[in-house]
Image (cartoon, rainbow, N blue to C red):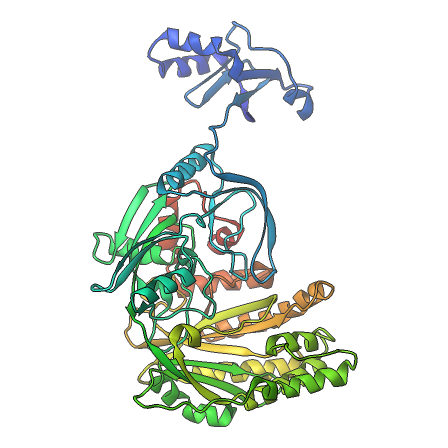
Length: 575
C-alpha cells in the first residue's frame, strides 16, 4: 500500500457537486463513501506531518471527504490522504540489486530489476511501470563507462531474452532478441559462414545497448553499428508495440529509434545486415607524427580498418591497419611476446626489485604493475609510456586471421575514459582535422603536466543516417574521427585521486571537442566532467550537433511519464 497526499479541501458543497456531476447515479457516489478501507482523512491544523500520517479512524457517513475519478473533496481545513493498493509487480523481478559498470566507475543499488523472459513479460513489466509510475530504465551488460543505463529507482534487464530468431543467408540478415550478446551473434553467424560488417574492440555487449548508443569499430568507409539495423521491435509506454523498419511507413522514427539511448522504448528484437565471413591481413608498425601526417589520407583510403595509438610524452604513434588479404600473401610475424615485453619487464625490475617472477604476465598486466607504483606522477607515467613505446616498436609485424580475431583487442582494466567524435572531411578528401586534434591534445598534456598514460586511441567511421548518432550526417562520403583519452585505476586506494586528475584531463578533451564541432560517445558522457558552466556548454554543443527538440518530442510521445529516463539523460536534454 502507498500513502499519497491528495490535497487540502475547501468549499465542500461546491466540490461535492463537481464530483457528483461525473457519476452516473447518486448510488455510485454513496457506494464510494462506504468503501472506507481506501480513504483516511485527518485534521491539518496543528498536526505535525507524522501525526497526520498516523491519524486513525475511518471516514464517517457525513461525507466529509470524497475521492472519485481523481478528484478529492473534504471539509474545510483538512488534508486528505489516499491509501491505495499498488498493482502487483510482474515477475521475474529482483529487489535491491547492486550494479557496477564494466570499468568500475559507477555503482548503484537498484530498487528493482525486471528480467523478462518473453515479450509478454516485457509488455507486462512496462504496463505495470506505467500504471504505478515507476522507473524501468533498460540495461544491457552495463558496459558503458558512464553508467548510461543505471537508474536507482528501477531497471529492466533483457539478459534472458537472448534468442536467435532467424538467420537468412540468402538475403543476408539475422534477427535476434535484444538481449543477445554480440559474441553469441558472431558464433551463430560463423555456423553459416557469415559475420557482422564491423564491431567494437570487445563483443560482450547486448545487441540493443550496443546499437542504441551508436557504438563503433574502425574504418573510414564503415558506419557505426546502428546502420546494420534494418528492422526493430520497440515496446513503448506511450504507444505500445511498434514495428519499425527501413521499408516501413515511418522511416523518420525508425532512424531516430535506432539510436534512442533507451529513452524512446525498450528494444525487444532487431534485424541486422550481415555479410560473408572474411579474413583480414593486419599490419602493426610505429611511426612519428610528421611521417603520419604525410601518409594519413592514403591510409584511410587504402585500408578497410585503421587505428592509431598515440603515446603521450613521446613522438611515437602506433599504426594498426588491416584489409582483406591478397592471394598468396605471406604475413611477416612479430617477434615472440617474451622478447617484446622486455622493456616493460626491465623497467619494473628497476623500479621494484622485489617484483618476483614476471614470466606469464602479459603486456596489460605489466603496464598496470608499473602504473600502480605512482599513477599520478607525471615523470613516472612518462617513463612508463616510453617503455610502452619500445614494446610497440618491437611488436611491429603482420598476421592473417579471421576478422573476429583481428578486430578485438585488449582494453585494459578499470579505467576512466572519455571519447569524442568529430567530422574530419570526406573519404575522398580528408581534412586532417583528426591529426591536428591529437597533436593539439598532446601539446596540452605536456604543457599542463597531465599524467596521461598511453594510449590516446583514435579510430574512424563513415557517417550514420541515425539523427542521434555522434557520426550523423546527411552527406554521403563524410567521415568522422573518434578519439578516446584514458586513465587507469590500478587500485582502490588511488581511485579518488585519479578521478580528480582525470576530471582535468577530460575537461581539456571536452574543450577541444567543442572547438572541433564534435560530440561525445553516448556511453561516455559523464556529468561529473561537465559541472557549472561546462554543463551549459555541453547542452549547447548537443543542440548544435543534434535535433534535440525532435528527439525530446518523440520522448514525450513514446514515454509520456518518463519511465525510461534517468538523471544523465534528463539533464543533458533539459531545456
